[in-house]
Image 1 (cartoon, rainbow, N blue to C red):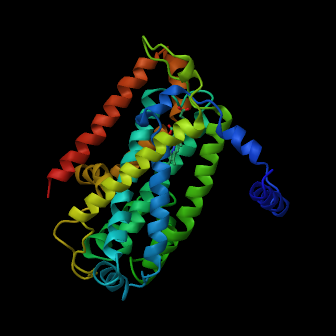
Image 2: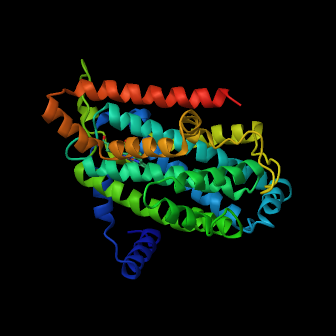
Image 3: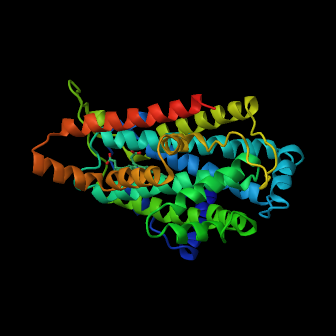
Length: 357
Ligand code: HEM
């Protein structure tokens, strides 16, 4: 052994003493074969969601260095980040666009899981964990939007609190908890801030850990396509380095796309919040358009009840489907048709709302 390699081996064994970790186990776990279809990016969108979440955490921490969560100073601090802090506009734009990408990626990931039937036995629980992650992601978007404290986000928070109040039985308690009082005011911003940077990230980490644990222990669904011939090389497609390489390429590409979008459409700032003047057109973020259109078409109570019923069925769908199939002798095609109808309905209400004033 050359003196150089002896030195390296010495450092490695010293490090192993200080931090006894079974690297062999990690290497073994990483090299596990995974289904070859994971080479196709659209089948492993969950990884893209996780990647965008990491961007959100990093850019979010950087924004928190300058953001002030008080009604008197919040708007000014966002203006300061956007106009004066070095690269502040870029970090804020990345945070904003990556949030939108993350929501699109979660929806697409969910559609992939649904239409490939990957939620069925034994992955019912993981579907429910995923559904909670969808809820957490949407709440992240809503609370983050409200933190800017501009007119639209202030009134968006007011509408959301009113919607929460219409929830049967617990409505008043939820709305009071969110607002920190009977009206949107001083305490509301602090609560949204705590939710956005404390409670939701903790929940997200715990749920993602559980999601990944279940995926690791149950494995990813094997999909077989017609006329697909699996070669020996494909049979040995491994998590590391094969699948991780795909994820890394997508990661670099996404960062590139996000930067270009941030340069062309940097995050803007509207009028500061004015609790005394209701704006002519209140608009939530696009991912709540379908809800907002439903509210305009019906009433507060009906729109909230409809959302709760549809949300509840979707959350429990793997079990509801099992029950429906047994009771009415339905086949898998029924679920596909239902999924298409639900998706088109969502799209229709979203586009309708986006075209209206
Ligand atoms: C923050 C949000 C989420 C993250 C980070 C995430 C992450 C992942 C990852 C990395 C996988 C492995 C394979 C793949 O990428 O498809 C996966 C699979 C899965 N996800 Fe998610 N996911 C999220 C949200 C959701 C949602 C909203 C649902 C459905 C309601 C869901 C249901 C599932 C199921 C059932 C699987 C197993 C799929 C299979 O076996 O083929 N996930 N998720």
